[in-house]
Length: 363
Image (cartoon, rainbow, N blue to C red; front, side):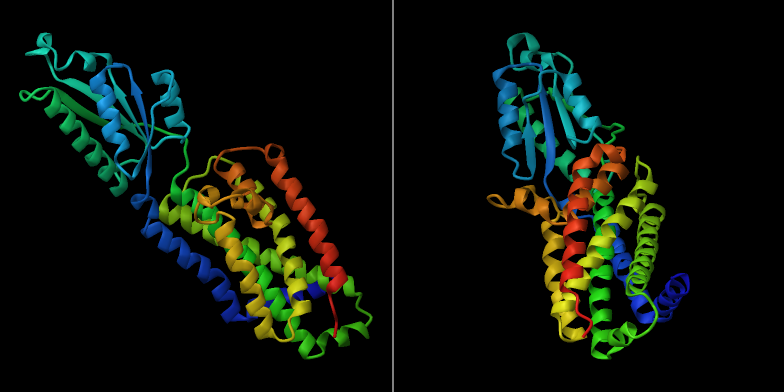
């Protein structure tokens, strides 16, 4: 089997166009998402801790809730609870309305020092953070005018805090790894097998002393090694060029990827059994792969899908793969802590293997 594996690897490496495209396509997407960050233009999660509990602070919260690109949450029991949520990545921004806010606008407040409103965030100084800070500052300015004319009664104090939450690019980078592996394995093996069938290469294998299982094992191992190389390149560029950060052990990421890659290869074998030409195999592969990319949360959250779709897409093989990889890479979880996702992948492996064996045709 080892000589056959070496031959398969040589053929993959000599096919320069396929090899370059297998690596270049996800790399191009890494650069696109690294340079243009869609999170800058999306909504932000703002937590509000109202320690004043006054009518004036309620009006301020109402004004903030009126900003369509802010998802405001103000049900925190304490400031420490909200700060913990911010540090864990559950919030993008946290505005604290202090108790002294309640005294503003009263006769006794004349000549008092301005009240500072801390605005904590973990987004650094990127464009999205600056836009949100400016918008909140504008709302605070309107509240200031309501309270008294001069001197200013309110001061917004924006400062960055260290958080454990993953940035958008960290999340999407894992999605790009899954996209590259799935499309490369599923479509390339389907096209290759379809081509071999049309050229009667598969029939010739049956009359050789080579065990058929060794041939398929070599194909699986060769394509898995190529996929792992592809994943290493994508992650490496994301970390070195765009400062992606992972808290977990990347070794587990590659092991999960190799495990899931076998499922996509099995699906590719099934597709090749239905396609009567390499072009048809490529088309069928894209019909399966493209919807899965968007419905499995590779780039965007599936929570916004209508009706029961967020629950239904959990059964797609790419969904548990991405969830497990993000869990161990971004959240620092151990493999046994993502056992549900691994169990779903194991189920897919059994089903896809049985389907590949049952449906595969040599001629």
